[in-house]
Length: 115
Image 1 (cartoon, one colour):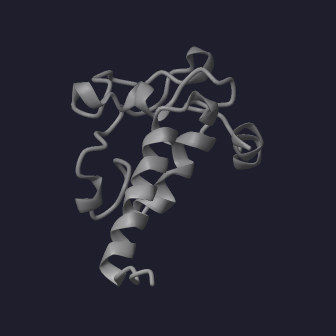
Image 2: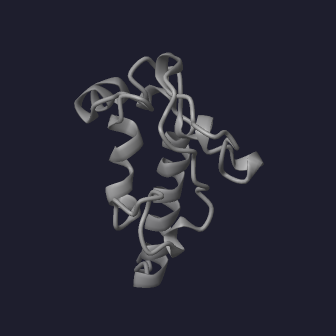
C-alpha cells in the first residue's frame, strides 16, 4: 500500500515545480518578440539583479524609459515597478514582456513559441 503524500509535502513539491518553471522562463529569450533578450538580460543575477544602466536596452536596441529595478526580494515590495503600477509579481510580469521598448512580445506569440 502506498503512503499518502502530506499536504505540506505536496505544497513543497508544487513550489519546487513553480521555481523550476520560473527559472527556465527567466533565462528564455523566446519571451521576447525577436528571441534576442530574456528577463535575465536586464535583471543580471550576478550583478545585483539589475543591469546598472540609466535606461535599459530592449529588443532591436530600443532604449527604455527607466532603469531596471532589482529582482531580489521583490516579494517584499508593497508594489512592483518604480511607479507602483503593479500590485504584485503576477501583475508585473506582463509589463516588460508586452512593452515595445523592452521585450515587445504578446502572450499568444510566446505560448506558440513555447508550445
